[in-house]
Length: 146
Image 1 (cartoon, rainbow, N blue to C red):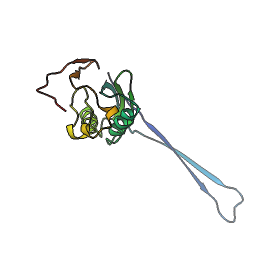
Image 2: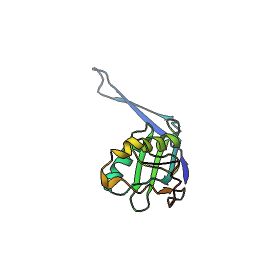
Image 3: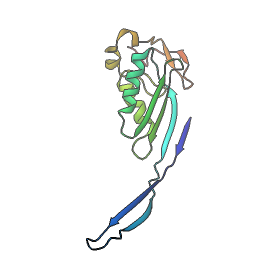
Image 4: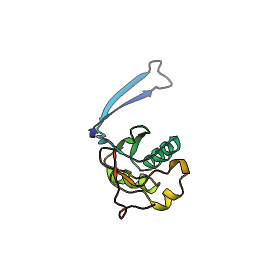
């Protein structure tokens, strides 16, 4: 699932002026609309993992990507929901950051070295690979071994 959200900002500037000899104060108010048109993209994809420690590591990896606003991994569904500024990053940067932390995503296999350094409770069965619906399927051991 992928959604794009656009936003704009409104800036209000107020200027206060006075003179020593005047008892009356003049207030000048100007309003300026600034278009920031941030293209926020929201997407959801599968990420392998087992526990709360996995959640912390996966979300930290996703949030480390410049432009990511939010990342929330669901342990039960094995899916992450991510919102990011499309002008600063893209979907593959998020997949690559999570994979670099040792976790398989739907599109990128996790770093073997990082996976081997995960706590035992975070290591999962590599005889199964995740398909794009977040479900496991039989793995071809020639493409991924830990």
